[in-house]
Length: 205
Ligand SMILES: N[C@@H](CCC(=O)N[C@@H](CS)C(=O)NCC(=O)O)C(=O)O
Image 1 (cartoon, rainbow, N blue to C red):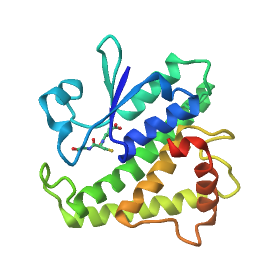
Image 2: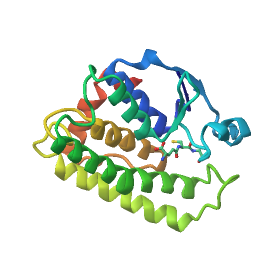
Image 3: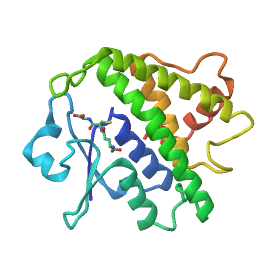
Image 4: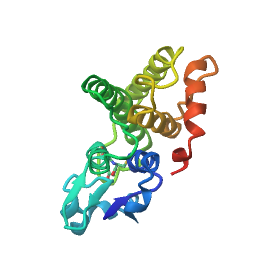
């Protein structure tokens, strides 16, 4: 199988970290797509993912699966003997899902929108609105504060074990550097959690 991705982009990083935690990185060949050059906009790429985004996975039978969490779900289900990262019990699965959605909608999306609308990185394919980007940065900063409070006395974001919620929050905290938002000195719980996750070998995947 192949995964079309961009090494420096945050969504593909989530997939690589997820696969690394399960010891599955060798299951796919990784094909680099240069987003700045618009390699994700070609007819050949759009045939694999009509949304023109990375990552997209192509299975050996030609089936293409886009969306970061859909790809992660594939690995969770296809390799049941690996460490579960999306919860074990019905309650755990639902709670992980709740966190994944909170992180996606209230943290990752504002961060991405702020990046796109304040830097103009994709101005060849969209109309950046600086004020919207600045508003989104405020939302992202609020989530840093929310996470810091939540992580007081907790080792992981959801329950007692490392899950995809930790992966998605960790990679989003890192992604915030592109909009110059970093963990503040007073956000000690968030910092301690970040340092713990950063030590995991998967953080370098
Ligand atoms: N909802 C998608 C979002 C994917 C996404 O936005 N990928 C970015 C890179 S992190 C991208 O391909 N951007 C290129 C563009 O917008 O032209 C997912 O979860 O995979």
